[in-house]
Image (tube, rainbow, N blue to C red; front, top):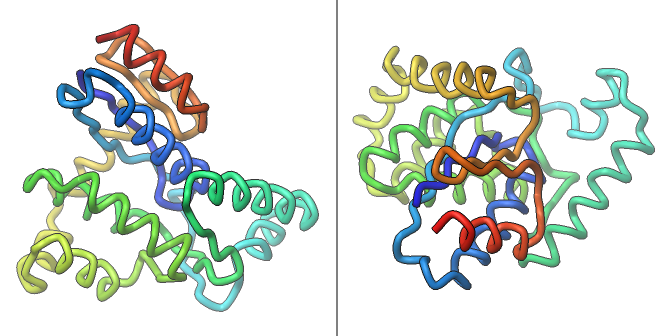
Length: 207
């Protein structure tokens, strides 16, 4: 079984859903047969990286209510804690995620896409790293086993940009307007950070 997941590194519920999906897979009798494929989706492709403003103030600058955003991230932090993830909301760097998506595609070539996604999410939500900073990406790449010089060249390749755009084009064709979004064997779809039970039910149904 292949589970295709559209998500953004900047999406707190994508991180939470990743862990819930992993927990569901670990409970499945078909866990050895399951492959998770990560697809690119940018919540805001036009976002300009800005290290001088915190994430809540950024959304407020875009017209959101400060109370609304504070409540949203507070809720996300509580949900994350329930699945063993620690969010440091005050240290999140407002950063464009396009380069980070390219790194996930590069990692796919060595079958470490999932590890790359996990490291990027942790860097963004827990460690307060700038995921648009090439040095941050090279450090993550080093952990995955890439040589810095080779990885930097790969990140600049035009073909990688096309891979990210292709994922986003497919998302539009499928009518995906928000993430996380899951497609099980090109048949069954689930939207949002659902419970482990919902993911497990889908796995058992399709297997």
